[in-house]
Image 1 (cartoon, one colour):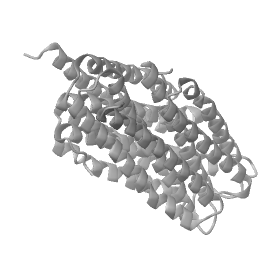
Image 2 (spheres, each protein chain N blue to C red):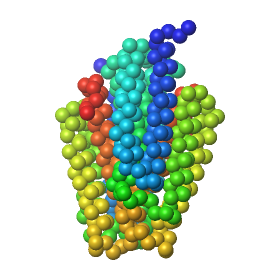
Image 3 (tube, one colour):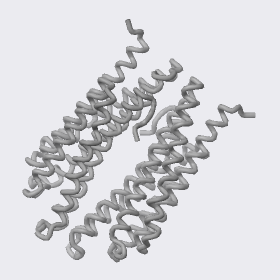
Image 4 (tube, chains in turn purple, blue):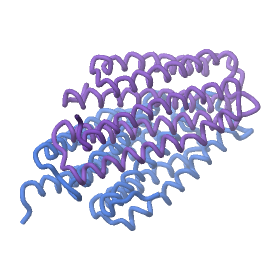
Length: 214
Length: 214
């Protein structure tokens, strides 16, 4: 049987997995809000970011409390340190989904995304969802091999990000500067979202092995 | 007299202050590389980011080592936790300076910055330098009151960032899409740089008071 202390540590993992679920849902809804375009959905992403922040605040206060009471060593200490870092990354991923939703809101009832870019943005949204799902599963299972796979998904995101720039800089671009700015920022938000998911997975590797993947 | 353990803790602070100095120099050189434009200086910023990363690696390994050996409590534990977070933010600030330098390198021998935007970018660079100087001084002195002043500098950065967008979206913008993309990204890099400096200062507040500023 687990003692109260280790139950609190397990509870941290549950909360982090729940954070991955919330920020996955946020980027999924933000992508839809952008493409449809759907103002109510955009507002929903923006207002519900509080849930992610509240969960992170719980993670933080549990860790600071455990650290003050328990003088943790070795693996327990690594669990707390990585939980804090993972929480920081996941909280940021929530913010990035909000940034996407805010562009959708700003341009509504128009869509910020011209027709010829919709499929690329849709793919970026799908990769963002996949990568955070995988990160969540790594956090839950502590499976190092799966965690080491995430950079592949990140490479796919980077390729789509490059494709966005190629489309923006094509000779037949006819939408002017404002949509170009929107798309530059949106592309950056998705790309950073994936980077943070990779960092979460890297922290799983550190948690289990005690060394950081290069 | 301080024991070896507390000397190691003090050493962490010295390394973090040195990181603020390095990333200040990096954003200063990156701004010059962008405006002059100066290819050698841009390359210099890019290659010397290794120094920041190496220093952060030292901070990390010292902390993990101290944590494993010492079972730190209360203020010592807070010192380590915040050092880890500050190091993460400072390392990212180094990356953001590199991103600015890479735009300078990409557009050389042209400047990525049209004439009418040079003064705004110069100001953003100056605010970035000021804010990281202040953050470094907060880390060194643990002065909570100064740390709580940083959001003001961040507000000034946000105002310049908004001015960039106004210039990009003005009717008389005549530089086309590519410079608009460059400037959108550059603006974002400076703005994020300042955000991370504010986080460093917030961690000083947490370190000293045990509570996070809202």
